Length: 541
Image (cartoon, rainbow, N blue to C red; front, side, top):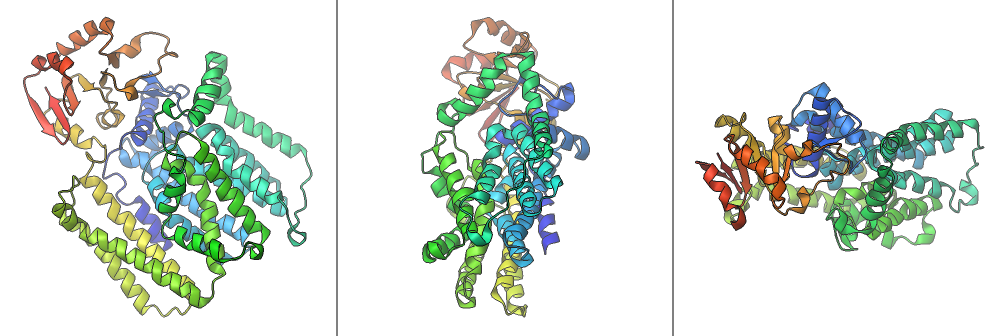
């Protein structure tokens, strides 16, 4: 079952193109790294882009080299990263459950079934890699505390360095909380021997500096302006000012979304936390709840910039706690949870079976062909047959088997939906296919008021972005050494760039417009004789 679930992660991951905005950025920056050969200065559509450290871009470029320049090549490594997270969850479970492999396996299965984890596996961002590296660093330091082997201390520092090279200081959250929780108010029977400070701690810190800070130090040596850029604009401003990257969400955003994206396990966890007296919970599990879940959740909630996957570091703690609290249940209590959770799985798969009918009945903008219902229907059949005929008496194995079947089915069902709805999901492969069919790919490509790295990735060429007031197109050009960036970005309000645009318009370009041209830009239309509609897009040529 575990092998089949791993396969479900990988099947069909290239059936839809990179989606805007985050996934497309990472895919295109990785592609441009390969084209330019410059691995130290990430570029997005020809302009240097330092919003994130480069490790995710490096991995993307490496993946494209190994697996090929296509969407599957972009997604294979993030999927493998999530599978590695599941393995690390098993190893962390072994540590915290004191060698109980059954509970460790349960924690790994619960974690791998969380909707938020599945989303991270199918969406290329820094967060899947960051969660993997944080889990590795956490496992390294806890394993070092448990046994004292030096190699685990080096794994901690290496994981921490790579996490810093992936997303900066936020990569410290889970490992730091694990260290604090290890030493916080240990009772007499769990008191931990403090490991002595040795030369290996210094060497490990040196490894962190070499791995985690070398790229930053190189850029600062190249241009001292990067000090303020990294420390203020991409640390303080990102945390304190939501308008910096237009990711403003209310303070309660994660308090609602974190439980919602970990259903049905979040319901079981919250119910058991409320039901069991705090005094009956061992200190180690109190610490996991406080330091692995609640404090990081408060920290991320205080940040003004919020996206769902930012809180991935809290979910290992949630999975471990879920297994701990459900493990305290009697067989009768666990059976009631089993019935409720399996019913939830069945209802969700049933809704997916009916999705094509519901989409047609309610005029949904999504395309759901009838055959799409075959996968969830098969999942329901397998679930019913397995749980009916399997002669397993204990409830826990049956619950875990149901979870694995549901996860496998959900993964297989989601991919055809994404394939059928690329335009609605902000993909541009259908646009690229149209341009190829009309033999327009050799012409200059103009994109009106939208940032479309996904199209650049699909076509393997850079478009010219026409910025007509879209803040997402305001690029940071202060680190460019010359004006060549203007070949890829034209500010329509800047009269000095209009001659370049006029020259391009005489080269028989293709113009892509999402929606309509503004009234002030209707003067562009006479340069194009034909147009075709595709979803919300109009292709002028």
